[in-house]
Each structure stands twice: as structure tokens, then as C-alpha cells.
Image (cartoon, rainbow, N blue to C red; front, side, top):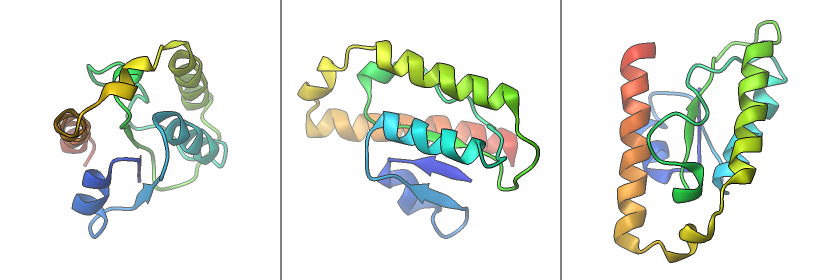
Length: 121
């Protein structure tokens, strides 16, 4: 299952994978992931994976298990720390994103996700 706020990810994978689209911020994605983890899903990708810092991009895609299993303390720990880390970043840079940069950031997020999909599928 992919949880994302990147419409490029949604449009590419909505017909082949379970995609939950969040119409919101990077943090909104992290919170949605956390909520799913509390239901028994498990992280399959790190919530802060990739080379772009949370304060430098508004887009995030995270892969979690489709199935609910036992509560994964490691997954909960990682997502809670990711939310804390996100909150520490200065997000002023996001105010100045041009349309070109926005497209580039969507592509970076999609590319990082696809790298993970090649490993997890």
C-alpha cells in the first residue's frame, strides 16, 4: 500500500496498487501512515528515506504493508521519530517553490518510490 500526497504517484499506480492519496502536506502523509501503523500495518520504506529533506519538499510517498499483523513497535518508533524530525525542519523554503521545481520534486519522490518498489515487489 502506498500513502502519498504526490498526484504523479497516484496517477501512475492507482490502477495497479493500493494507493491512498492524501490531499495535504508531507506531515499529513506521515500522520496518515502513523494511523495505519496503529491498525497493524508495517512500514516497508523509511518515512524519511531519500535525499531530499522534509523542509525542502512538500511531497512524500511511503510504502506500508497491505496486511494488518501484530503491532510493529519498530514501525511505530520510526514514524513517531519521523514526525518529530519533520517538525524540527524550517519549511520557509517551501514558500518559494516554482512550478518547475514542484515538478522536479514530484519526479524525485516518484523515482525514490519506484526504487523501493523494485526492491519490495
